[in-house]
Length: 277
Image (spheres, rainbow, N blue to C red):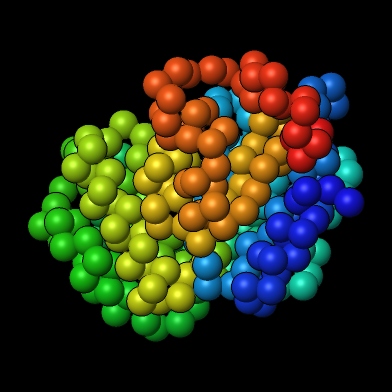
């Protein structure tokens, strides 16, 4: 039995599963294998962190879930992705948004020559109800700074653009938000502010969040559960508190020993511990 299996059972026991990624492989341009049998689970109403170094396959995992692989000549060639019990791999991105999944892309990806309000309205493009204006006011309650910025979004600071990107996701009334590196390019003070808001959104609105983040300490401080990826697959998973206490996670991602290495394979214990294999 693999190490991941009992851990995933514990994750499932924590609540109703909203997202299940089962043994998927992802190939780009029919040649480049990026994900190599990756599995993870996200319980409803929880925050799950996906950690790993650059090139581990974290962003590819999110794009596989949101259907955006097609825009980069990628595809899921094996396994399946289920959301609320239904299989979603292979369907178009706008249909995935309608089902309740919205991705906050790395680098924000706001429309710079549109105003903040126009960007927020863009997030509600799949909706046909008459409550968009009310939801914009709700976004302003979480991000009051945006209400003061009435000009073009391209003139917002990096932190304000990140807030706008998250606010745009809220406008879709998602059940699950996929967040890709929300701390990228932000000052330490703004990073704390953004992660505080992420925690509030989960607590107040019950939104489930799958969080890709290189700032492992900050990600685990808000997450309930976490997965560590390397070379396209999960090598370790557990509760956030267990990962924070794990000696290898401390060394590789939390700076616990003051020595930075590029791979778990750089330590002798890697092969000795069967869980890594």
